[in-house]
Length: 376
Ligand SMILES: [Zn+2]
Image (cartoon, rainbow, N blue to C red; front, side, top):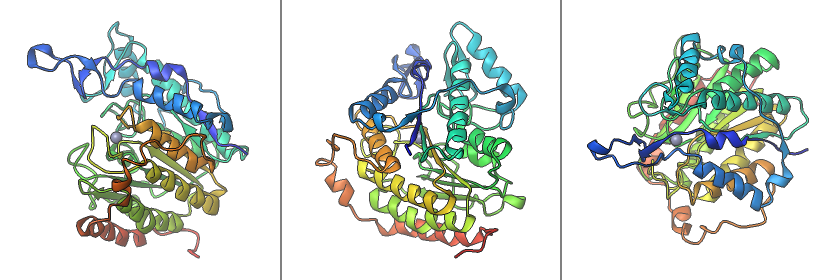
């Protein structure tokens, strides 16, 4: 069996306009026009690198299709879906909500194609004919809430995938492990009171959204204990992220006993990333993917779907993607990480005590998960 792969050229054409990093261009305010940091450039390079390394040839292509309105309404409000359609029908598009989520002309259709493609991939993985799946999409999704776009995200692809699995595929218990370096606040808000969806987010503390993703945010009502945040200090790297995987993510998955694991995956934890200050290397992503793939094999017949989120270093993010896909497919590409030499110091840097303290505090929350199946 092969790993499924879903992308579409239109994803790279979602037009985020001109900006300086994430600030919309405003010449008279001194914000010089340049390509928006979330343009199609970096992910197109990621796609090309998967091709050139031969990894794409090992994967099974799953075609995209537009999400139906009824599918979007499992997560988003009617008014929000309509607002996105109206804004992107304008000749120059608009914004999805927070002023930092540009929509180009036609972006609503592209966002629907991304969401629908993710649902097709989830269906294909659930059918048992694929090992697992990887979706390379734009626009990203994990900051989008039910009724607003945020942080470049329009429709919450991971949340839509979870609801689709429950509604259509008979998979009730879904674990979402968000490895983007910014907090998966939108996904968290959507499942805040839901004990059937475990949401774990490892991210840089206070990065984006700035006041979101703290240890104390653990869900509410029946969902109490099913939201877990690992807000890592600035400068946390390979050792801390792997420690968080072993101390928090894997034990939490074991207790929860998911029937499907969804992984919003961003490469903005890389050590050359412009929008965060973590210090991961390519091998970090390879190892995290391997751990999650093995967990999925043990817990849920391998059912795991990874969905791309952020990652803004045009040079390094594509290589982090190669590392992650190598972990997912269990195969090596035919080129090896060209950054390995100059990132060796990052790879070897030890976890610092204040980083470990955060992870150890979060690890104590895992016991709040009441697994329906007895832990073995
Ligand atoms: Zn991010």
